[in-house]
Length: 320
Image (cartoon, rainbow, N blue to C red; front, side, top):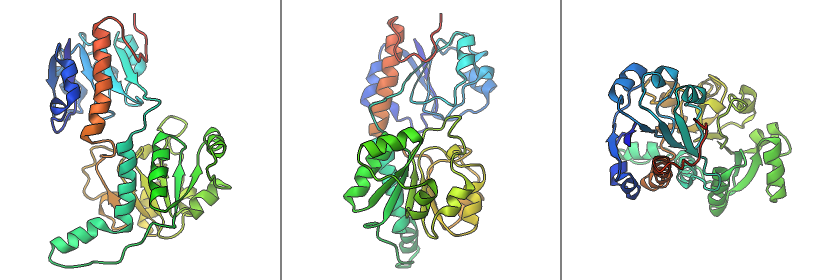
């Protein structure tokens, strides 16, 4: 098959063990990002299979109708960036392994790294010594503080394990079902939503972005957080109601560490989430490690080989 891989910005995949799975295919790797559907369609006209890097490119009807040769989109995890109905209408099969039993340890590690870096002022201290100064301030210790994990999923449970290893207390909030599962597993669940936000020194979000979770974190939630508490978001920006985090940060009351943004790539150098000293921003690198890519794209390439062999797997939209 003619396979086109989008948005491999650092040309990473060719150097990973999993790339050998595409040996029998004609592969083109695009190392830049093309957001315009017409321009993107022009460059991938011959594509029979399209490989996506998570949600870096939106796939809609405007693009799909311009790709008459396209048969398969292969990716991993959730697909809010893909118009599944348009895929079906254009005879394009979507295959996506939902990896129900595998957490992203890379994302869990990144969450803990952001917490540590925020509490110990690591970016600011590095900048200070590189500028010829010495210490620029005094950080805070995490041991004995309370980490509030919102969402009782695989990544959050991995984060909990790391947090307990450094001596943090962990409490939870989630959907009704999530809280029930947490209690059944013997975990500490906050008495109420307001208490969860009010008594957590650090709140970390670990919820999938779906229609019913969009904007689930409100202004009232952030207002309930104690002064100098830290909000961490390595999940999706859309979980927080529009403008709510920016407004709270402008007040200067809480801190934030964010790996996700409403617009990505985020290139607005004047955005308050990039400029305010209370915010530690990173460019959506939670899952961006060689090891995680090899794990994810091994599944993605397996889907291509299965389709080429006439026995597709992880089908989202059966296509005649």
